[in-house]
Length: 409
Image 1 (cartoon, rainbow, N blue to C red):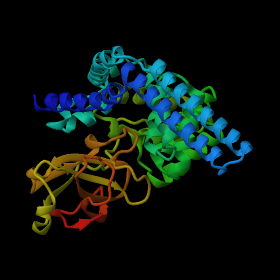
Image 2: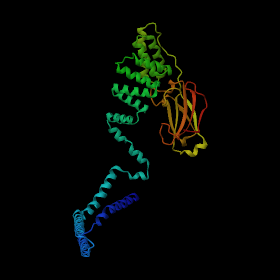
Image 3: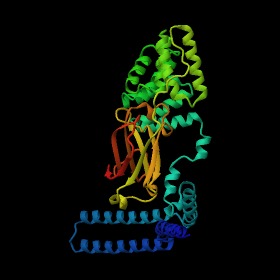
Image 4: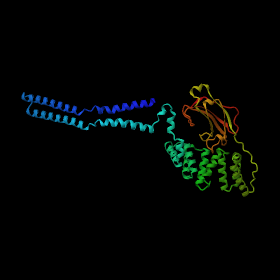
């Protein structure tokens, strides 16, 4: 209620500033009196000129010039006063302003403003984001255009380019998807997940052929992450197309332990392995493939140094993550807590992957860390509190792994 009282007061003040100059315009009677005063003053000046001429103080030529100047000045004064009267807008303008200013101001504010933000600042951020209903009603093309606009404003956003590429690929806009993945690759460099995805898109663009750049990308990425299931699948596909059936069989066999929980995918790979075994009888059949050791989880405890407690609030977000020692800057696994949850025991695994093609089990050495985010942004910001531990084995993580947040970014 107090907000609207303030609004009403400001509107009254604005109206006074607009109306008072109109109300101060001279009335017609006042204008007439002013003209009479100007005429009287001119007569007095003419009499003075006459006396000066008679007394010889002015020559006839000087008298004639001064008289002409006096007459011209009087005519201009009368013309200005008459013009002022004619251009006077009249009291109807007052009533027009009294009605128009409040109606237009309140209408525009109700459409564009949000007075409740005074008591609830979060509404300002909420209004700046698209609502769930708007997103649901937005077409896929409109959503893609929104992402493209964001990338035009921030062309270095590698994650944005990657997401755009995945979306375009799902819509079978292959050429544009390849461009987006290529841009991501240019930004992040030799990052296996991006390299595998780019290779896959290039193969689709080339009618499924892995020959050339796609195969080269896959082979380089597998040197970094030899057990990545996506990379093994693509490498097996390239070998099969080259009629290197033993190599294809070896790559796809390594996949089986990693996709054991996905019955449909596992059965499909087994079917393909059977086809390879019929093509090359020298290939030893896979009956019960050896289980490749894969990380179950990295268990760790997270706490906040007591000396930093005053810098945080109970609802501040805490991101616990693992990322590759050498490779993508994007986390391989993330869990989100709050400061109020600390100390806490956390397990990071492939189930916490942000991107399906970038899993914890695909990297031998990782960095584990924890970060307090005042903004709630998963991307590190100046002023965030954090701690990191490098060279942690994802296959055989140490027991009793503990992180205490005690540094400032």
